[in-house]
Length: 157
Image (cartoon, rainbow, N blue to C red; front, side, top):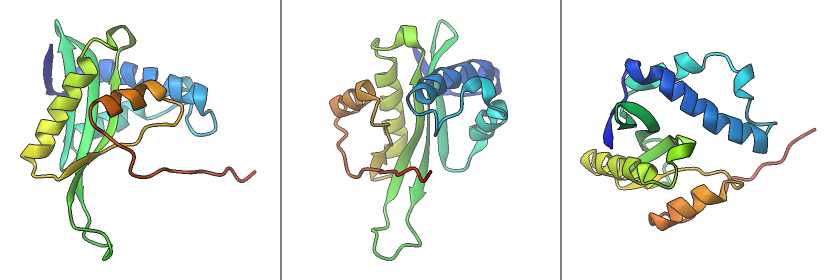
């Protein structure tokens, strides 16, 4: 397996992987996530992430086939006076092709982003995981991630 910077040549595979995770999220939370068949602008969104400032967009490849990707960016609080001024890596998306899940691809992507985080001088990695996604929660727990907050919602009908 090879972990490398995503390029425009990977865009079709990235969009297919994004559709995979979006389909799952739409199934679980249809009021929040669009069905990939109804989305517009996905290609433009993902291609814009290639050059985002203070960010990483990595793909995992096996035999030159993209089997997963991860996005992340470095942020630092400079505006809120009661929060510490720490560099934080925020993972945006991680997804692995279904047939390669539980084979180490996700772990390799996380290791690569953690190395990038350290190289950037950031103090910690943060991510958001949906409450319904118990397998992802277990995956992150096994990697040493712990809960630090909870996002709660109330739909106003």
